Length: 527
Image (cartoon, rainbow, N blue to C red; front, side):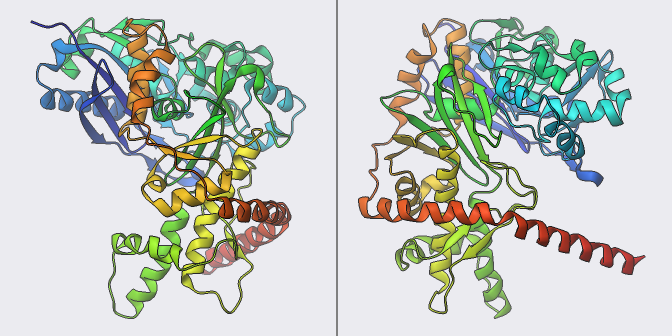
């Protein structure tokens, strides 16, 4: 009878939890997923039931056992990653209410207050991370000021993956990635007194859990967790890093020659580059993240767009709405099928589009809750395909804007997410950076990144770079070189994009004030 030959990666997202099985060489063997739910409410709240999230995780693992023969005996180790930021408070008897998610906006007034404080730049230089409402530090500071009973009843403040790790192992801990970009220093991977003081949380420091690295430390699966998941008690469990860097790790942010970067261009856009900690470029705007990789001395610089392909969904929905008004029903899938043709029938660089379609504004490489999307340069001769191309090019310009805030543009881009499936979109993104694009064929990059940590932890690989060479590099497609003429067009377009973006904030502010005034009138009329 052969020994354990499977690694399980858990990736607990905001709306779905996945458990994925890999062999020791990184080949995916099967997956199980369970929908997760969250609630939104007044004041921008977004919460998730902590007990339900653990139940869903256990269900996903049992479902994986139904798909993989003899999974329990064959599992050499498992690892867990999850949605980042947010605040998952645990007290003596379990959760202290529902978790505040990264989507929760209630801490906005506290963020404004702290960002204007004298210690905020010092906090940014230590963490490398701009202050925003997503983060546990901002949320805890807001709780401390407005709902101190929540923190009074808590014994530890965790993140989602930490909460699942507690249920799997009984250990209260967090990892170096979330600990350092929230409360610490990315250079030391430890908590930082100045950062905690900048957040005004000195008296709450006891809520911060110990920091452990899942490539070096594992804890055994408890008997209760084994009963819930169908796995064997004693199975080693690794605490993964936050999902953004686990996905990037599994998709190729590290490995190969030159300055490699990795972008996930889906509903949102996440843009990362792996650098030595001493090479980090901190922008004057104080935005973005610096998140440690599970490799000594190596971190990722991160900038994120609130909306990426959501902009394309919007421009396609305009066409769908017009056709519906004319009595012709058309599906989103039908319109996506026309995307390549529309892009082919339009000229590049004719219209500027700023892709800030999210109602929450933008967070990378600048922060503005009022930022909104818009076209610049329309003329009477432009037609619908020109609008579609402008939106697609806006994604490329926004990506370039993010990478420019982190230093020189990368020499190679590894691409995942919905945009990677379109040859025309890949060409636009490649030319926007003037860098070749490689697409990762890894289906579940986040779970794979977590499983890679477990692989190193149990000694299946001597270090993470050796694991990357077998798990990641072979799944990268051949490089697609940028079109030289298109790259020159976008080199000329980007300064106009950046100048317009810099000039628009007063317009966004005025529009936001007008919307607020209209909402107030509407509310009065309904009273």
